[in-house]
Length: 442
View (cartoon, rainbow, N blue to C red):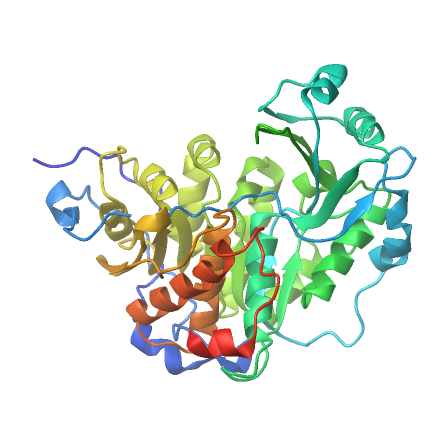
C-alpha cells in the first residue's frame, strides 16, 4: 500500500552529487576538496508521492540521537558581580566587541550562520526558583528586565559562562580537528550571526576566537547580546530562561554577502528559522553561496521548530541544500513520518531531495543517505559520560571528512561516529582536549 504523504512544498531541486566527485577543488579555496558541481538549479518540477515500498525498513539496527543541546557547558567558571546584567567581570572583553581579529584568512573552509548567545549555567535550590517565581523544569523566553533580575539574584554564586549554541559546538570541534597537521593544512573556520556591542558580545567573540573560530559579524550598535540562563536544581531538573536580544535578527548586509564568495561550505543553524526576517537572510545567503560554488548545509536543530516552520525548511532544503544534519526524530518530522517508521526510511526519503543526508540515532548508531540509498554506521564503542553535544560533534566529523576529501559515505560516517564518541566520553558538550594521536586514529 502506498504511504500517504504530502508532497514537500518545493519548486526546485539541486542536482544530485556523487561522493566520488569529492576530489575536485572548490572555487572558494583551491586547497579544499569539495563536491564538484556546477552551481545551477534545474527547472521547476514536482516529485511524485513515493510509496512506502521505496523506503522499506532495514534489518540493520535502527537508529544516534543528535544529542545536541543548545546550551553549552564550556569553561570560564567565575563569580558574578553587581550590575544590571551581573556580568561586569566581562568588561575586559569589551574592546573585542568592536574589532575583528587581525590577519584573518581570505577564504573559509566552513562558515556557520547561526544564533550567537552566551550561556550561563549554575546550580540553585528550589527556594531560589520559588523566590523568583520560576516554575522548575520549564523553558521560557524572558525580556531584558527579567533577565537582569535573575542574573542579579545569582550575584556571588558560582556559575559557568560560555559562547553557547549547537552550531558553535560543531564549529569549535571542527576547528580542533582542522588545527591538526594530520589531514593537511589547517582548516579556516568562522561564524556569522548577531551580537550586541555590549561586554557579552565581546566575550562571545573572544571565546570563539580562542577556539580558532573567527566571529566575522560586526556588533550591533547599542544592541544586547542574547543569553540563555540554565538553572539546575539538585534533582538534575533544568529551568531555562532565554533572552533573544540581537540573536533573533541576522541581516543580509554587505559583509555577509561578501563572505559567500569566500566560503566552501555554508552551515545554517535550524534555530534561525524561528525568526521570519532571518528566514529571508537565510534564503539570500544560501542562494549567493550556491551561485559562488559553495556547498550549503542545514541543521534541523529541533522537532518543534521544524513543525512550526515546515514549509520554510523545505523551501530552503529543496532549493539550496546539499547537506542536511538531523537526528532520527527530526528526520521523521521532516518526512511527516510517524514514530514507528525507521530512521533508515527517513534517511532514504530525504536523500531523494538533498544530496547528502546525515541522521543520528543515539547509542543505536547513525545513517548516511545519498541518492535514495542509506548506509548504516554502527556506534563507535566508548564509555558514555555525557551525551549532550554528541550530534554537534558528529556533524563536525562529517564536515571534517568532506573537507579532507574522504570519498565514500561509509568512511565519512565512521569518522563522524568516532569524533562523537570522543565527546560523549567526557563531561560537557565540547572537547576538553584533542590530540593528533586521537585524530590519526580516526
